Length: 239
Image 1 (tube, rainbow, N blue to C red):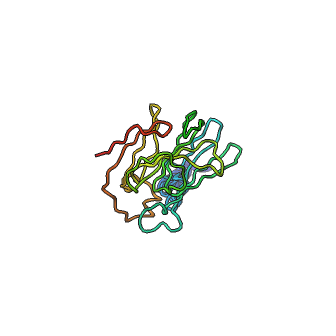
Image 2: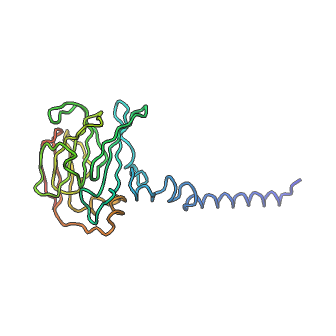
Image 3: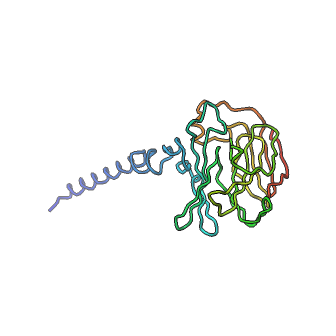
């Protein structure tokens, strides 16, 4: 028979071992560590990717028919020494529930898309995915309206769903090289823009790691409000 002292010793050893394993996992030595699949500082975000290691930014949005839409971004092969329309490449991917997928590729930094159903844009009624692109290449879009007054512009675009490999997004251009994700409210679309890339791209590892010494501009920022078809409602310069 095992004595009571040996039983106590065995239980104590087991408790010490369990505590050590728990400490190792919580401090980065196990699956939840900074270099693991679920960590906060992944190689994917530093080199480009879906942003999934920085929170929910990499999660898809799913349409009523079950198609998942998500965006990814990475530096171009020659990003240059300062941010420009040639510095980044973005993709919007549409993946059906059965696994079929299409990809739209544009220059610049694309925001996470939002959906608008049953709206008319450019005379075409349908269901759309909307997103902004910072530092865009204007030739990637059919520009419906130019609401910008300078060459430092970004775009808000509409892509009819489902899109095809030859689809061309319809867009409006606005002042400010960097644009927020569009927000829909009161049957209108709200977008903030700025030339201050450091301010708009806080927490964006792809941007910050590509241009770690970037100096922010002091130019004005804007709040744009649009109708669902891209007609400008207001442009407020933010002080």
